[in-house]
Image 1 (cartoon, rainbow, N blue to C red):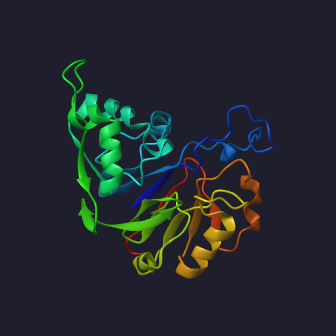
Image 2 (cartoon, rainbow, N blue to C red):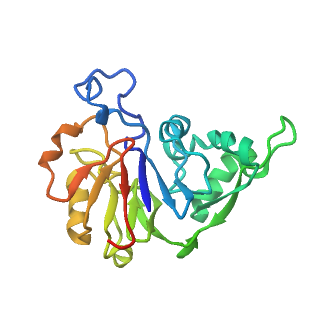
Length: 255
């Protein structure tokens, strides 16, 4: 299984429009962060988690040939507003892609982007996605997938466990009932917005508390703001690093 960090940045992206701080002005390519998303490749199938605002750029950079399933964490703009970029894939394979998410997320997204799910005769829009509500573990192309309930400030979001890795983006906390679902991880990718606290996201200190509780073999901190310079990852504990755009992690079954 290959996991590609398509985007490791917060909702504004880095550099942020109008900002000339040290990180936004950095020459380090690992400080250039598009909106948070990952690609999971398993058995020749491509699973996309979130259709970020930067999906077209991310897909071209990663040379993604097709998408076989979409999983949504929640309905915030930076995680779904790139959904129209899926049309490029549809022009080639003409298939309707299954899209998974919580009932609350799908209710908002199918209303906001009705033409994506139902098509529109005027203008010639064909349906691109078929919605599937996720409330319990399921399987995709032979890969076990478990939805992980997360706190995201005043709303909830959905993390996903794929085999021995988990992606917990956009969360302010991991509720007690979710902790038993996250044992024995070889890779954890988790929201760690910035150093200072935030009401809707884990900051780095909060994310490290979750890491201490879950004890994954390896952790990548993602959804980072311009408060975080990649060069500062030597301040992190062993086994924890900052995610960066284009990063690929391979988990071999025999590991």
